[in-house]
Length: 157
Ligand SMILES: [Zn+2]
Ligand SMILES: [Zn+2]
Image 1 (cartoon, rainbow, N blue to C red):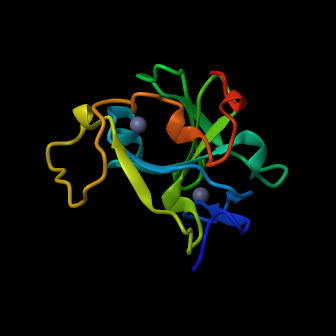
Image 2 (cartoon, rainbow, N blue to C red):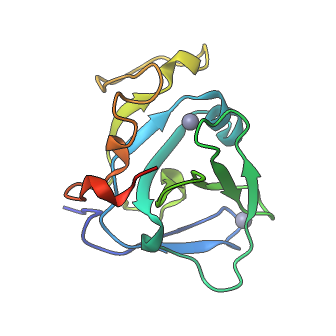
């Protein structure tokens, strides 16, 4: 079985100008329906979370950053300046990076675990799964962000 918590994963944008590597373990994978993710991705955001030091970009990699207008955590969103692929979401404080799951090379080993911000979901969306669906964040907003076995103190944002 391919499991994302063992191997170093790589990923990148559509045009190939941005390539990155992610050290295991990956955090929980979520599906976020918030309006910012929706507009930025063209639909919901499938993302997984790592700590910043787990993400490596080659020196000289160019990304464009955009501050998410409705983010309570004043997050910035990083994308490829050439092809526009949505890649990273980084809150202003803390040590987390959300990586767009769709940008990972396959197999990723990821499985979605929950829906977030379904209060803002598009009206065309229907659920075809039994995953927990939270109106906004899950009750502990950082719990989804911690890789299994990671102490809670690792992120105090
Ligand atoms: Zn690109
Ligand atoms: Zn979102």
